[in-house]
Length: 284
Image (cartoon, rainbow, N blue to C red; front, side):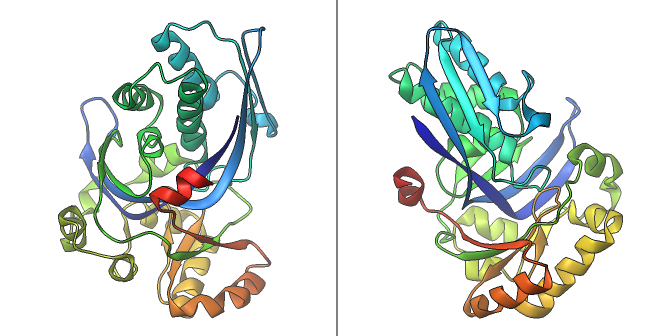
């Protein structure tokens, strides 16, 4: 079995406070994009075997390994599988690569072993692994709340939009960003978030109201990322750090012709993607 493990961007991300469990209370709107890692899962007779083509991730603490262990424990099945991951999603880029790998591993194992777990059980396991994992169990775009485990499908039209993604050659630590975030300076949900919850918006509207409470920390720490965001706004009209960074994206409309010039200015550290709908994710 070969799976595409898609990346995500956050068009809205609000940090609403600190939770008693130590996590942060979030409201975020996320969209899958057609940048992906490749996961190959095969049954074997030798237990749980894992490999990934990035040395620093090739260990038993990898989220995909944790996902597999939880799956077999919950399903009551003896682990007899080989999992191989080929990475293309930048590490530490705010695109959810590790969370995506974990979720698609859960989904793939469930299919490979004839669906012993319900979707609800997959969501429950996902919430034990990491904040973004539950989002990737769902298809398409969705709102994530709580610490990221409460997922709500949206009715807004956000699929099939072109996205220019700037990919710097360094990562950003999520833990560092949250550590330096000043909660007293955040303003809570704005009108755009409420509009999204009501399902009456489109990506055309969203691209003019992109929001990320973590962005100020990231831009303060990394001058290059501030320069990239300013460049995207100048050339395309919008730009936002995805998640805790380091990648920055723009939603493209008629500005798509600006893509080649942007890639040149960023020394080819940019790719053109698009947001996925349900059918595209299932069929790819």
